[in-house]
Length: 317
Ligand SMILES: Nc1ncnc2c1ncn2[C@@H]1O[C@H](COP(=O)(O)OP(=O)(O)OP(=O)(O)O)[C@@H](O)[C@H]1O
Image (cartoon, rainbow, N blue to C red; front, side, top):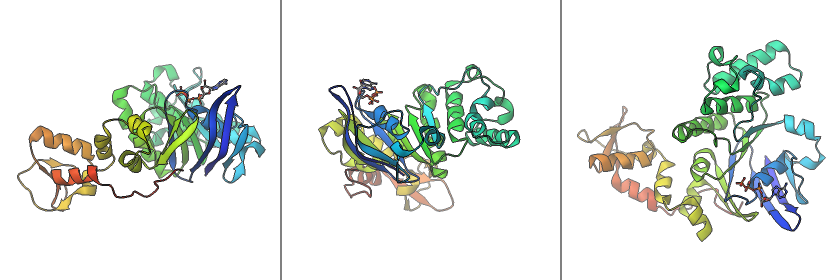
């Protein structure tokens, strides 16, 4: 787990990060979000000691990072950067092999690991192993960046604007896929982004910062339902209702029932897409594909948007 305890950083008279208290429990993904210059990257860099806090401390697995050897510390942390930062003169395999090779793994073990990592991020090893980064699309480069960060199986991953260089059309699907992968691997992830939709897709918990301070840390659901103040409400956007719908699937909200005459959707369709389908077709009910007869109603969608029930994980940190 990652823990910020009153961690602060000043540059001259300017406060970049103001006594940040934040926990990222083991196996969870936390997104730091906020306007440009609010202290997101500075906070992230405190974790791997690229920045030393001048007050408070940052703990990793219960240990103050200031007491760890920086080289060993960084080898235990996967790092994914904006624009990926792949080594341009190394092949895809050479890039993914970086940390295992530094750790002195045998050639055979490294080679096996490279193939496994490429397959994990959805790239066929035989096709991609020998390619150079400049022969990849933005999305493929990003996948290689993730494969490289995961190669030595670090428990912690730091991601700084990881999808910034990916074409906006492909970005959502890639974010969903990588998010599911990180969840299945139970990595502890801290991700910096200024994109609320990215945070909603990837994070178990979102920490909104402003002027170096933490304004609110909450689950995506709680952040959209109950923003702490006008700044957070503005930041999460005016489309809050639609964003809340995009967090859940039709299967979560459907009720048993027969409706043979209405349009059919897959149970994993998100509720925002389901609403869109209702608006396009004029239907107020949709039938879910599958063996059980189930329907999703417009009424249920309304209820989901307006629901004010306290979500678990709400609170300041
Ligand atoms: N090395 C530095 N020297 C002086 N000031 C710095 C340094 N690094 C960051 N800052 C300042 O600290 C503040 C926080 O910067 P930081 O990079 O953490 O913000 P950010 O939220 O990540 O911004 P962005 O979204 O634009 O990347 C900014 O005002 C920035 O100018």
